[in-house]
Length: 147
Image (tube, rainbow, N blue to C red; front, side, top):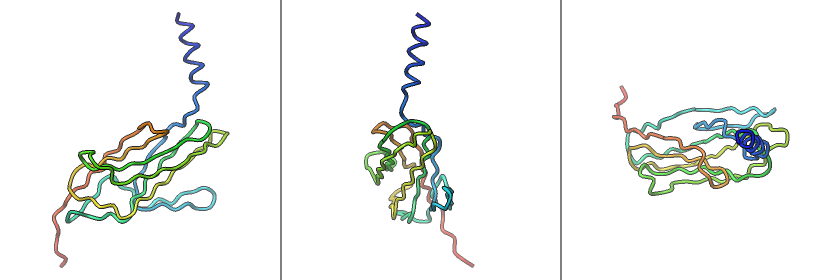
């Protein structure tokens, strides 16, 4: 019985064609440079605002996928704190390189309005399955006058 289960596991892993989500980065901007390099500006994990609602001009979500084979649909969704409203969505078709190299998905969201303080949610999906959920706290801070 144990040998049969091991063979099943080995067969399943050998046939595995879905890429693995290596990392997700939130940033203000990203630029693709020559030679496959990326320049990432303004990496963050929280949004601070003096007043709400607040408009965040540019929000980049970078996902790096590794392994896997073939074509896949990758989606990034941003939800309100109570998850009752989808604020934004980006869909990308991924074609994984045949030699198991990395594939980067860059989603840019412009002029997102955060109406209330709270933890917003970013879902990363592959072929309509949620693989990762990131919290994005929006925090109101007191405004300070300039001297």
